[in-house]
Image 1 (cartoon, protein in one colour):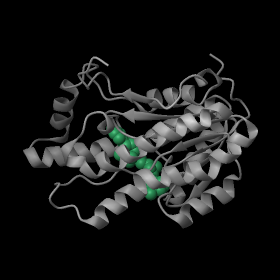
Image 2 (cartoon, rainbow, N blue to C red):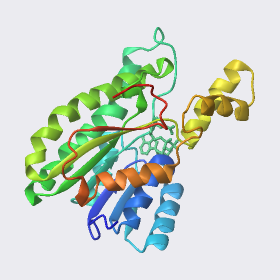
Image 3 (tube, rainbow, N blue to C red):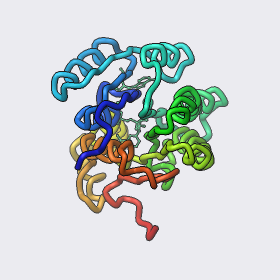
Length: 259
Ligand code: NAP
């Protein structure tokens, strides 16, 4: 299927590996020129070089912490305007609800809610002016089905979801399509680190922790960054014009719910 976005310009945040990279690759395959970002210079530069060589599009790496004002300013300066925005950042650490301080909440809300809001505020007005835009926010399955140990994530991502629910309907009349994708468990370094925590707590091996988790997923495997990226690219395509303010859950059926 031709996604109809060849020659568009996009920003994918937190994209040197994992889900962000999956999105960057799928957009590059559709012919989108990209700015990609993550904090570690060597990693993001290597990823940009690999994606550009594989898909023949322009890929500009920017090493910056997207959760800070300075980091976003650096990314936006390299980007200029964009037709497509994919927001993403690392997830907050697990813990116990009684231990989280105000500072812990502020840090999580800055990283997983307000940095996405700031990027939309910076880029969506230009999209509105040009009458076309696509935004995908990478959130989490925890928006639909809370993960108790990830309470900081549950909280921050619920806030972003509420913001998008209203804002996406305000910008839709101008050709700007804003949606969220909610990853269930995907095979990335983030999943490995969560599984390592489970393995340690239960005194089992990493493989066993993963087998146990896979058994709870109807699809009986972890999602892959490339599957995730393909969904993201579709939501950034011409064909997504009627999908407004939705929360697309990619979890292999893990959430047991009728709707
Ligand atoms: P990952 O494999 O660990 O990759 C994270 C990427 O983000 C890396 O490129 C990392 O590079 C970059 N990054 C992290 N913090 C950043 C920051 N402050 N500024 C810029 N770049 C940053 O993680 P993932 O699995 O792709 O997860 C992506 C998001 O989805 C996270 O928020 C995670 O909580 C959420 N999620 C993941 C899953 C899953 O199963 N994988 C499930 C639900 C939700 P640097 O470290 O070099 O910056």
